[in-house]
Image 1: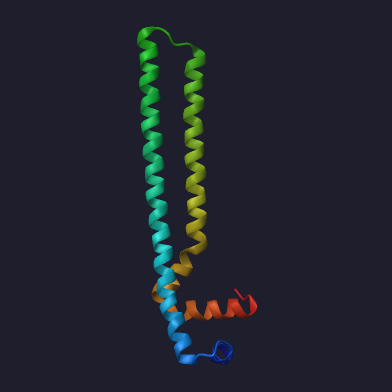
Image 2 (image 1 turned 180 degrees about the horizontal axis):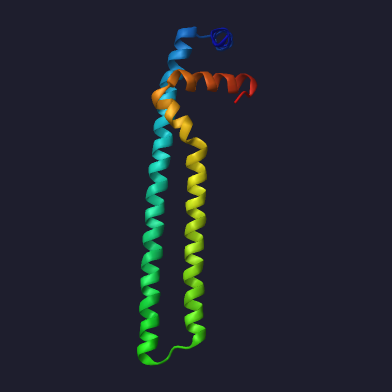
Length: 133
């Protein structure tokens, strides 16, 4: 069945069936490397965000310690510190959740591109022709 679909698509595009299939197999690898680059970018972004939040927390802790040493702190200042720290953790958790969703939604496609290019190519053709999943 899929050979017939490929033949029809090749005819519409005006290329040989073998050439179309070869191009799809090459594209599978390119797509897989694109997803891999995306994952690496996500990891780098998460590490950078984590380091920024960590540095900000250390800065805030030093500020609180200075307030305590100087005797200029108040409960309001400490509560602000706790709220800010909690906010940073919530933001980081949301970013991690978004990253996990992105990876979860694309991981099998990336694996198919690397290890089963025929399946990847067939899925692309079927999706393009009829929206099959």
